[in-house]
Length: 419
Ligand code: HAM
Picture 1 (cartoon, rainbow, N blue to C red):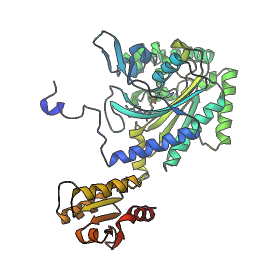
Picture 2 (cartoon, rainbow, N blue to C red):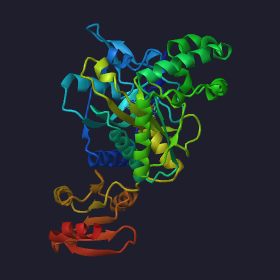
Picture 3 (tube, rainbow, N blue to C red):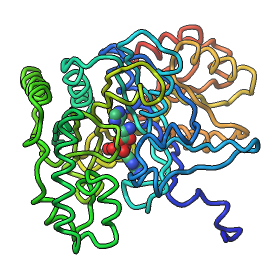
Picture 4 (tube, helix red, strand yellow):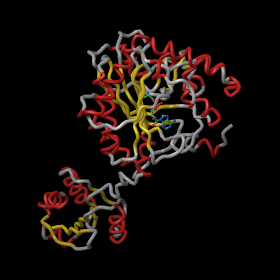
């Protein structure tokens, strides 16, 4: 049972994002939104909870479904679950509304997984993601990967490695899974209690991080050796396209990713500066069967998700995207009384200049101290004498130089000097 002290703390594995840190979040989200627009994606917003069955499609043998789902029964007895990732809900929305394909959408949303929290792994994490539903053209695979690669670069990240693989088509996987199962059975002693999981879905063992399994995982048969001709041609086209847009990558023959819905192309961007097990910055792949499995049309699709928390940890590790030091440009000092100051602030903000003030104190020294704490470039004081003369005092807070500016021109003056 949680004690009184615990219940008034953010639950284990969740974090509050407060100013000024939140301004970096806004910057990252804004950069992603801008890039999504460049590539022709529109924003999609789906519910934070769905019917349990929507997420069950991620695979009964996956950790996310079997161990980590936040599922519950609502007051009318429906079994619901909080979203553990963004793809299933987006595909459910596609199957329900049937927009014209290709449907290219992006999202920014919190996800919930009951994981063992550690740095870079939380019970609530945020993802920026994109999905393109309704085309199997390898050109769209290239576009998705190029989109995410360009996004990381635009933030200044350089220590990022892209791994790609192909899961092949149904025929490929059928052949490969049979071989892989034989291989796990011959290593049953190492897999121990987890053997039933290996039998349920032999692919799932490949993405395990368990240190004691890494030797057998490294020696496991490679999916690439079993690709059908059609899958191999598709994978070749993706690789050639990535080269043509100068996106560097490595083929990772054992990259299978953690959900059952993946088919054909899969990819993962690793943050090399992050180190450790939580170095997956973002990843995704094709899921050509999911729409039909949810009762929607046959709609081959591809997408990716990228965790915002991990992205910011990678930015810290590479010393890029510095915290902005100021949330305001102008700080107004009240030396004569409320209505005039409120009017001046209203006008400054109306001129699209970020402005703030202190409240409840007429002490000038305290107000100037608040002005310099705010990080504003200019302090504007509306004093008795200046007011009588139709002026205000403008002080450059970095040099302490001050001048008088005509009251009626001050908004334009600030706009000109803040450019
Ligand atoms: P995922 O690999 O499970 O894929 O998650 C995508 C990204 O979300 C990860 O690379 C990581 O940055 C972040 N992430 C995942 N779990 C956590 C966690 N517990 N704490 C912090 N960050 C986390 C998906 O979710 C797929 N829906 C991606 C996709 C979209 N595939 C196709 N379309």
